[in-house]
Structure formats: C-alpha cells, structure tokens
Amino acid sequence: MAVITTNRTPVNSKDERFFETLGARLAQARKDQGLTQQQVADRLGIAQQTFAHYEGGRLRLPASMLPLLAQMLGLTVDELLGLNVKPKGKRGPTPRLQQQIDRISHLPKTKQFVVMEMLDAFIAQANH
Image (tube, rainbow, N blue to C red; front, side):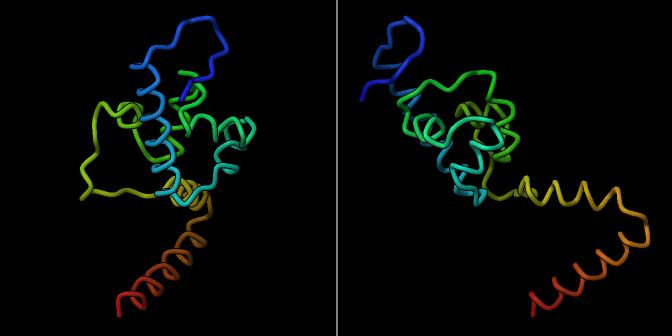
C-alpha cells in the first residue's frame, strides 16, 4: 500500500508501516470511544474521507493534530504513537463523559446535587 503525501519527501517502507500502524491505532481508539469517523473528522475540521485515509495509513497525519486527537480519544500523544501503552486495568471517563462533568461543574450547587442524586439512583439500580 502506498502512502499519499502532500510533500516531496520520499516514503520508505518503514514510514509506510508507521502510518499504517498509527492508522490502526487511531481506528481502534475511535471505536473504543464509540465515535464515528464523521464525528472525529467534524471535531478536527476535516472531511470524513480524509480521516478515513489517516486510519487506513494512506495519508500522513499532520503532527499538529496529534494533541487534539489524543485528547478526543482519551489517550496521551505517546500512547497514540505507540510509545507508551496505557495499562488496561485503569480506565477514566470518556471524553464525552468528561465534557458532561465539566458542564455539570458550572451548574449551581443545587442543580449539581440533583444530578448527583439521579446518578446515584441510576448506579444503584444498575448494580442490582
């Protein structure tokens, strides 16, 4: 498979493997977060087809997108690049849940209490 580039830098087989592996990691992390290619592309401000090319390893992902992508996918840039694998046992909130928590933290204390009571009731019911 050939990697599409927008510059004139030659692409060797090691580079191709890197971008294919990065793309596979992107696809898995996106699916783990329950996101579609379209949702990720919209947040990045790019076309869905472009993101599909990144996931397929056919297009080089700009380094400037790595921090936002990592944040969106609940990873560090190192993890996204395969440099530091996160232990599977420890999970944190998904980006969507984290956004909801942030929004709740800006509500008045009385409304925060109502949300917490609802969550407690839901969690208690789900555990039985």
